[in-house]
Length: 325
Ligand code: PEP
Ligand code: MG
Image (cartoon, rainbow, N blue to C red; front, side, top):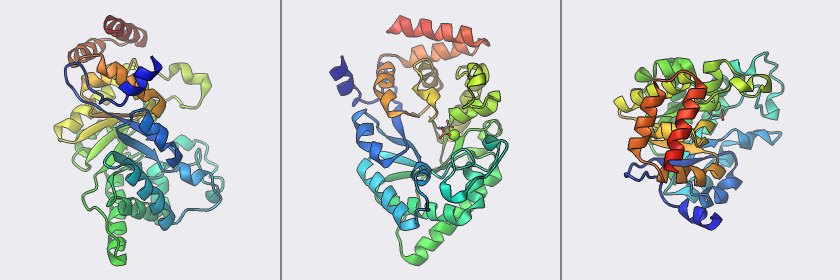
């Protein structure tokens, strides 16, 4: 069984009736890459770039970051790698910034807000991503975007980075796709508008669930309320997928929800273009995708959309899965 699933995981994420969904990996450190490919990842859908900042006492410079990103892009090419700009804040803080002392770090100066506050550092990182964009299949996304101005501001820094590279004589891919993570309810509700501002959406369900349900994702006292299949979460993701597709952009889901066997058939039914998950989950999730049909998934989604109790939703999903497997 073990050998067969290892071989099988190198096959594409495709349903019995031929619907293709790309299965990417979430990666935190460069060293994970060999295992990621062995598990059958079709690329890296979320590279959490902040992790290489966390273990050190100083900040990496532009050249050092460029080396890291170029190696990553080269090792994966022609597969895609999506670099997420820094998602630092009081909860995940590089030592050099000291203690931010925020009462509510999840609602504080984190992610894109932190990057905009430390604009020079942000621009350096963007320059490194841009320099890597000529060596592979590279995309960039911004975390925790809450509205249209933040997109414009972040893209402004990206243009500054491009201008500096031109002056310095460094090449970059001017067509590198630029997307945002959809992690806040505000972003969900204006996804139809934001879809015209970016090249792709990536739904970060870990934070989307936290902010939609008001549940601290790290607080075990309320973890019983942290429900991936809460009807509000399902509606949110569906709305984002539809809004993205209406505007002709791709929609990915990169939170843990996408590595949950109960959630994947529902995401398939919505027509999600790709998922990005923990590398170890890829073989099992690909197996589920390869043993189902799009028709089953669409029917399941229709059924689930009529239900408003998580327990009933879980039952329905279980019935569908057991009918198949
Ligand atoms: C998410 O929020 O779902 C996500 C993928 O980002 P992170 O887990 O790094 O916050
Ligand atoms: Mg997040």
